[in-house]
Length: 86
Image (cartoon, rainbow, N blue to C red; front, top):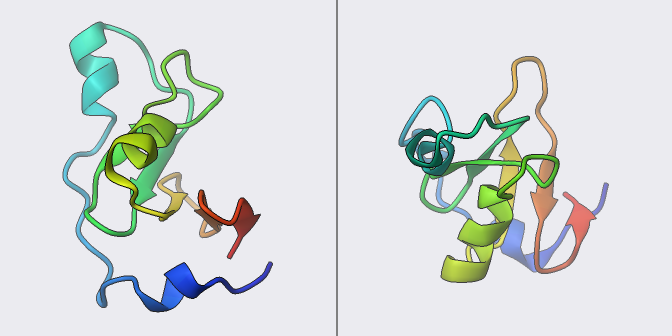
């Protein structure tokens, strides 16, 4: 894992999750494969293995750079901008 400038810009403490699952998947009637939490605003979206890729879509729409896994027992983070684990 590496550090990127975006990690130091994240809010502390981490934002609370806005939902327990991907609201876009719920609205579309699809099932998220894995969940991701935006570390800027707390949006929960599905991963790129899900049909609609809502976490990546959230980044594209907002520019929020870093997310983390929202799956139990996982704590890794990904920077969309630098395309690296952080």
